[in-house]
Picture (cartoon, rainbow, N blue to C red):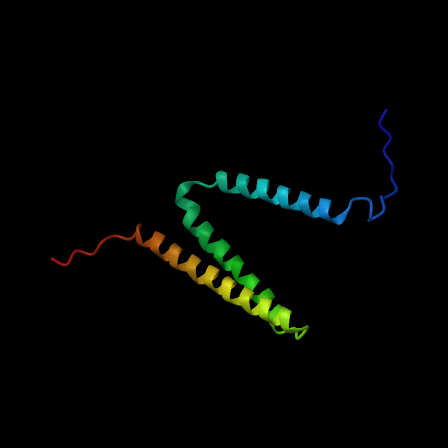
Length: 109
């Protein structure tokens, strides 16, 4: 017999690491399923959109670097800004190269 309770469970019922692991695994499966359903011609715009979303990490890194909560936070925030910038700019370069494959070649004759 299954008993359903209408009272909510306390927030500390599930340990935080277990909840975070659940969210990680769920996001991996969801991301894989979403990407697997996209036709190959739409992967380039999808990559460009995900690169734009990656730009949000630069905002978080800038907030971390400029928070003034200590030397370690500033150093790690600065590294995060550098790596996030490399990720975003590299992603846009790859997207541009992929779009170049679809452009028509100009004849100079």
